[in-house]
Amino acid sequence: MMEPATIPVSDASSPEGQKQIEVPIQEVNVDLIRRMREQSASATNSEILALVSQPKEKYNIGPGDVLQITVWDHPEFAEALGAQPTNVVKTGDPASGVVVDQDGRVQFPYIGVIGVSGMTTEQIQRTLTERLARYFTHPQVTVRIASFRSKKIYVDGEVHAPGAVSLTDIPMNLYEAVSGSGGFTPAADQSRVMLVRSGVTYQLDFSRMLEKGINPSDLVLRNGDFVRVMARDDNNIFVMGEVTKPAIAVPMKDGRITLSQAIAQAGSINSNTADAAQFYVIRGSLIGTPQVYHLNASSPVSMVLATEFELQPKDIVFVDGNGLVRISRVLNLLLPAINAGLAGVYYTK
Image 1 (tube, rainbow, N blue to C red):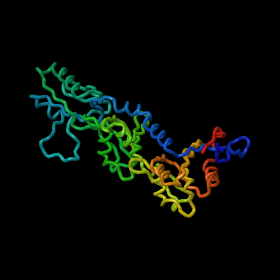
Image 2: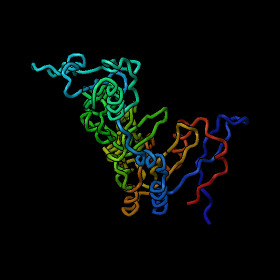
Image 3: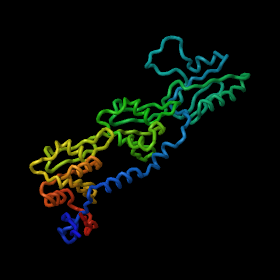
Image 4: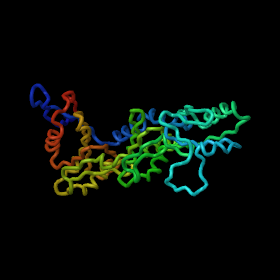
């Protein structure tokens, strides 16, 4: 049995000073890629499924909404209720009707002030009919919403027309919100759409949702929801070492990028100095608990694994030219305070 290979890294946080510890390395092989895919497939979707399964709510009247109220066979109400004038109205003119004030109330002839906030048009219509019946015989009342102004959702980030979108009596879903804001820009990362609702942030991945049979159009938005589409260059991959042109690799539109794609964006490896047997991926360097993956791509068969190994945001791809000596130095620079709990963890080739 071969002796375990290690990458010595200085742990500056150790009370003993510059103590050498060993960072675990995992070999990139078919089994590892299979496990990663299984973990991704089995990742919890309970929160997203809960969002999708929520029932659609009826539109409830709120402050700022404009109501068009008609009392049939009683034209005397028309002027008092702000009936639509017969002359041509400009597109930008406010809708004519009864405006719900900031306290959620409206003023109505014969009845006075009534609270309508939180009610549906059917409930308002029923209430008005019952109260007008004290003064008129079998009053016929129709209530509709002339202008929706009380409820909004907000779409920001990598869409062509970010801003507020008014909700109507027809429920708006996530797909409609993005499409109504002009759709994704070329810089959008469709795997990282953030939904903020009631102080809770949900990360939505359009591509994986579709793969798992979750339709984004089934996720109905609510008043006050904030949707932000992240940019692809917010989730860069750093490619360094013996490559033609060290670069910051950008994920694809679906938010994914493989090891081979990242290296391709860096202009491939330097054939004169690179050691194809020493490909490394450093993950979690910013949180002090790194994971290091190693790929021996010296054979064409092994290189195929690079096309299947998916990278994550802020991963560091390092192509070594001199074995463990340089990668150890890189880790010492990137990870000055590695968790001492990693000591004694070995990687066996």
